[in-house]
Image (cartoon, rainbow, N blue to C red; front, side, top):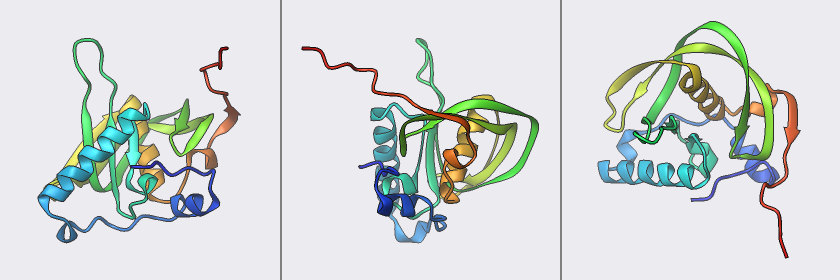
Length: 169
């Protein structure tokens, strides 16, 4: 799977289009399971913590997210279909964000610290997740993607970094 970036005007236009609802009737359970596995693999290979369907060229409201773990545990993985933020509250805080679709670019984004996300799991069953801290931020970032918005639209103090790997001769 290729991650779309704003480096291409055509791909940026797709990224800035609101995704359509995920239609469970168009996919078999096996296809949905494979899609989640591919999105998870693509996200991890890119060292990401979230990936929305439109970032890989799928016009559907789905995202995957993973809270980084530690040495003892891998972290918690989520695959959410047709999500919506039902509630957001708590203090709004600034935190530096980056994005797989906006390479080497970072900026501070102000977001609520707590959200309640509603959506569906891989079986089309309704779910509700209360999230705070980093998970709440990831959910909001991925929701922005599905709504056709990028973090750079909200960010302050945007800056680019060069690759950390230096060519050595």
